[in-house]
Length: 186
Length: 188
Image 1 (tube, chains in turn purple, yellow):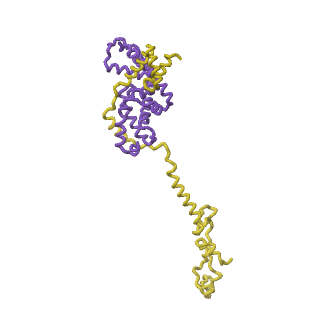
Image 2: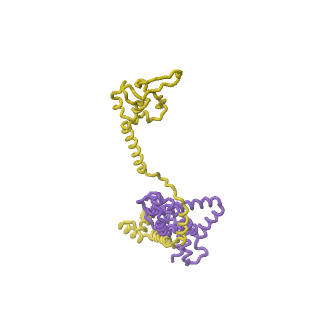
Image 3: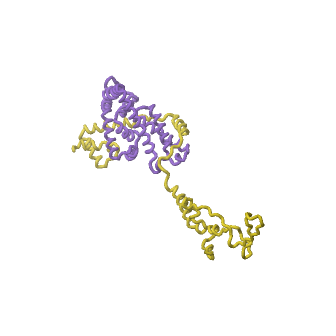
């Protein structure tokens, strides 16, 4: 990171290569939006570059990059919520689609054996319907595999709060996927 | 607290493999006795497996190029954190030292504060030059009919030496010579 701060383009390219996959995946899973994830990932690295001198040596580079990504993803979620509140009819349809036709009653009109892509789509949507503050913790922990301490740094909250949020998010995810799993089970 | 609620509190740590050996044995014993908790935990574990096994969304191949293209256009942002104080302290200290040195040395160089000052209180009206009249033996030889003509001063003094100047510069040189030396033997 020191070389990035000294305008070393090769070092910055290496940083982008190292984190672009994880950052894109994080944003994609938090937003459940593959297209937007790419644009936001680009924005993350632009911000890393612009604020490269604000990086404090000694702190973990990964948590700093993840912090920027998490903040941008949260901003995007809030922007969407505002837009959804404004266009309330669209929002209602989207919420109904998310909560009833896809997750709440997955037994209706579906084959017993779901294709893998369908299953993954369901799981992705289930994650996306978890409230944002729980969802972010869950994705950082159970998809990106960050340590609890690092998540606390990324989100700027105490370690105990991270644990309780992750426990709640896991319970929510389990409840959302329960119908699907019970259908799956023999 | 019932055994089941106590078991549920350990589900997360059990999944993260952050339970002690005693907790692990207790929970496994509980699972063998409580099918509900066993199923609850299995569903949690399955949900987390599904979440963890989602395919990773890779960055688009041209992401790096797009980022680099934009960073080349981005002007460097000014640091919001001010520069460390240590950078200007030495310069300020050097300037202060120079000023103190100048103040100490200036009397020895003959630069009195009165001459160096620029304030209006220090401004003095320029002293008109005075002829060295008393010592100079003015040999006037006015010609008749030329009474208004200025007297011509002889270049010789009483003791027969030639003065350096027709004007008395002793006060002037006081500023460039050591005042102690200059005042010694000076006529009051």
